[in-house]
Image (cartoon, rainbow, N blue to C red):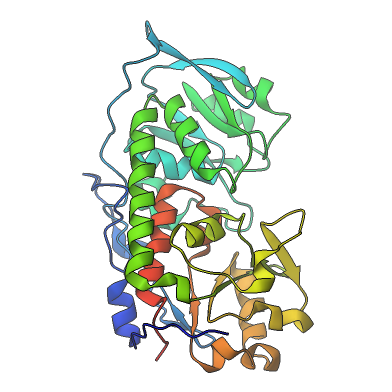
Length: 358
């Protein structure tokens, strides 16, 4: 494996300090946030340096974006989406979201105070912490695979943002509750989803602006880190499963936007699905990279992952012996799938790509 040409030896304190960067895609919000309730203090997991402990969650959501005046007829606008065309409020006030990327988008556009309900991921069962206390307190309305229609209806939303990929058979039932728009896929199309959901929220122009700012930041971050000299491995521990994440995954796309290279196996060339591949413990050498980023999907996966990371096969990896393994927030690298999460990955790269765990 190639070694980084720019080496910045970081102590754990420096790693944590370097990760405190303002998310450039989203300005500050006036919302009060008990940040101390959601910031974690663990600095090491099975030898991996933990990134993002000092991440700013108080000012993560953006200011309220202005309403797009174009396309409005009376108090509604028509939006074409994956399930057809819907008339939605020009400026929605009571929003329910049924996937994590939409939660990220609502926060990025400064509409978090209008969010009345949101579906959660099954293994975690709560709203993501990286979006701050306002989002963390939002009413759960089932999971992203199985929304709770009774809870949604009781909240009396005026807009529902859903996903054809997650719940392809639920559109009619949801649209009977409130105007509903669906995105087609998740992960691979996260940028398109951001703009479509932004349009449904009456703020497509602002969503595009936030995306443009992110892409500029990603390019500049990559150049500042000389990122093309590093092959980064992305490993996720799930209950009973080990995955490496490829170029079509959300985190893989952010790495590519920043110019970070991938180990040959993790390019998944020729694979039908280039989002991820599963590994057995015996295949752990395929997780090798100049640097390895690991995440854990829930507490059960964390326990299993730590056991594997303390095992002989993992300990033989070059990145492990070089002290180049970093633990990252699964909510940001895997399930966030939005522009705030993407900027969080850039923060983690800034803090670690040319660094070591001390």
